[in-house]
Image 1 (cartoon, rainbow, N blue to C red):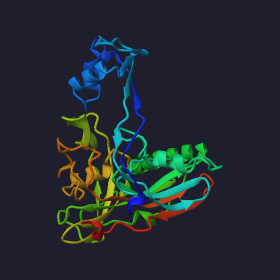
Image 2 (tube, rainbow, N blue to C red):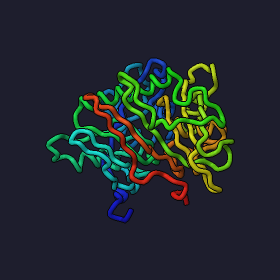
Image 3 (cartoon, rainbow, N blue to C red):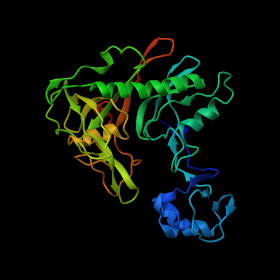
Length: 350
């Protein structure tokens, strides 16, 4: 990408974050509530925001710290902040006037969240398509900021609703059936999930990813597959309070998850794999690869075994993960098969 393909660092217009005090946190002061609820900032930081007149309770700006009651409505009026530069150019892979599929670049957030407001796919689509008579295409699902590849958007609300339901139903149905990769173990051949026909009914979406892993860890040969069924659950994290990590079978609150990994290429500097996911857990590919001892190459967060580095955050980049192939069956029954123009390869690292 050249300089014209980037959004430069820009000051946004600020944002208001809203909370309602649950019964379990009633009796805390406003600063204590925010420090417990939003652990990215300590109580002293929230005290400075309170003194600056940035926090309101039930529509009234707080002039000092107060004790909160259950049901109180809080609003933090965050002042404008500088959003870092992001890549803003993408390739349109498919556009039929309603459905839009783009090849999202690594480093570009999909939706506003955390430190991102204007430098997102959603805001770029709103600006670029504001005069589109068919409407603004909006993302149907999320990709991590540093995950590149196929992102599905749609202009019609009915199409977005149908596709969102299809995504949920497809992963749920696959997880219930135990596929992809049911019964496979180290060394067993794994079928190419893109070659398996769609099931009947609402199971109408299939996604396949590519990733670069730390080399030489998996006892596989190219073409071999591995089924990963490690649960995913919340674990303590000093900077966030909790974070999604590899869980344990039978542990309370841990969620079942299944992925099917196939080794595509092995070189000294990286292993290239494809991964089909049968459940939509947060950071599933990163966690599952780490859980079998082969984290994504350059991933600063997930360690071998699937635990999290206490100093890293989910939004930290450095890894290579790509939404590579996509198969869609629309409400009209038409099947669409798409692939990114330049699939991720080992040569892309470095």
